[in-house]
Amino acid sequence: MSFKNSHLSSVYETVLKRNANEPEFLQAVEEVLISLEPVVERRPEIEKYGIIERLVEPERLIQFRVPWVDDNGKVQVNRAYRVEFNSAIGPYKGGLRLHSTVTASVIKFLGFEQIFKNALTTLPMGGGKGGSDFDPKGKSDGEIMRFCQSFMTELYRHIGPDTDVPAGDIGVGGREIGFMFGQYKRITNTFTGVLTGKGLPFGGSLFRTEATGYGLCYYAKEMLKNLCNDSFEGKKVVISGSGNVAIYAAKKAIELGAKVIALSDSNGYIYDENGVNIDVVKQIKEVKRGRISEYADKVSCSKYFNDCSKIWTIPCDIALPCATQNELDDNAAKTLIANGVICVAEGANMPCTQAAVLEFLSNKIAFGPGKAANAGGVACSGLEMSQNSMRYSWTFEEVDEKIHNIMKNIFAEGYKASKEYGVAGNMVIGSNIAGFNKVCDAMLAQGIV
Ligand code: NDP
Ligand code: 2IT
Image (cartoon, rainbow, N blue to C red; front, side, top):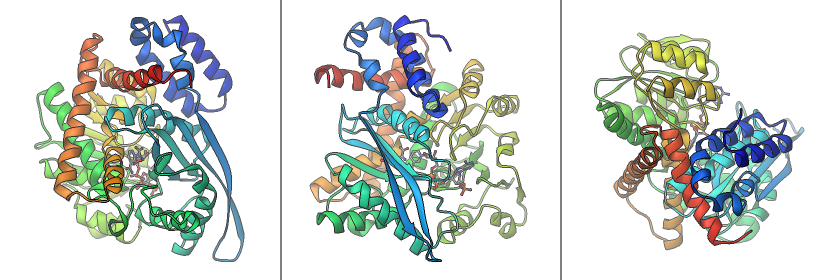
């Protein structure tokens, strides 16, 4: 990829050299830097004070060993990371991912995106991310607990309620956060808001479970209204994944009058032309920790298909990729467009390849990038931090209303920036610029650190 701006071009060359074997990280950096070209041209202080050079290099990257004992008494060793990417506007903040595909590249791409996402929420949170190549699938509760305890036995020394506040991501939900919180409390003898996504009896926020999925639909609702003069009412929606984000995106889309016709996991997808029954999905995924294929056994008019990537061949009006990075490529994008999709909003982080995003944008499909569209989860985490600091808790309705307003504002700010820079409705460029400007101003004010 060539940049028109020579400064960005030379910064990216260094990024390429330093991180040659990290494709996901390079992908995320390239996408942001392309968006920032007009800002870099307009604001000479960005080059003068080395803002971009500093932004693309994590403040700190921690890698550590996690030894634990499985149910057969065998010693297992996993590799774990925490990237503390940027603290210009607040303590490092971002989730922990437990998945076999976790590498330094994946964690760094997620941490980098998190900087801009967190800035868009308007809450004081810097960017961070962590995780391990531990695969939670098929593990007993005891194995999960021993892994989480060992993981926290190292991580605790790097985090803190005013330093770095982790949360959940793929493979990390309430159960894992509970085990990690317990171990942190035991080691440090402090009861603080060091993690978010906690259980309600020990400082968790109401609405955190719903926040990312509901927030995604609040954001998509704004896109539909402002970019398509339309709404969720009567629309067919396809959602990939069937985890935390996908389930609550589906629930809210249905509440807003849409019909959700497909969901997936990494093995395959289910198609239900009558509209998926979300209670059945919740029972399978949240209660039994089962597979999405079980839906087809329980709901007779639905069908299960073995290849999850084929979910994008189903004709729909709205597509919400909510599983993982690069799950929707340019061929899938072309098929969705040919089938009449009007709006695509990313519930997952970077689920669309760069070529897919270009397809959507050049065909004038309303496209919501993850760092804006899925910011409801971390925004709710920010509210959980506030509640913990106040030793207080807001009601479900209060948090819902705050997240709704934050998502509307994230859309409005991105839309405003897209118009200001002559690309009205390009929410990729608009959101990247809106998030960047805030971080840039904070970095400029704080000197060369
Ligand atoms: P969960 O672990 O709850 O669910 C993940 C879902 O994605 C599962 O259905 C899983 O299927 C599927 N999946 C994971 N990896 C792959 C893969 N390689 N190929 C196909 N499917 C896959 O995670 P979340 O719902 O929390 O996270 C989903 C996405 O949303 C991630 O990209 C995450 O970074 C992002 N996100 C999450 C937020 C949150 O608050 N939780 C906030 C913002 C973004 P299987 O069970 O087969 O692995
Ligand atoms: O990608 C994300 O924004 C998250 N996984 C949520 C992070 C958080 O700190 O709540």
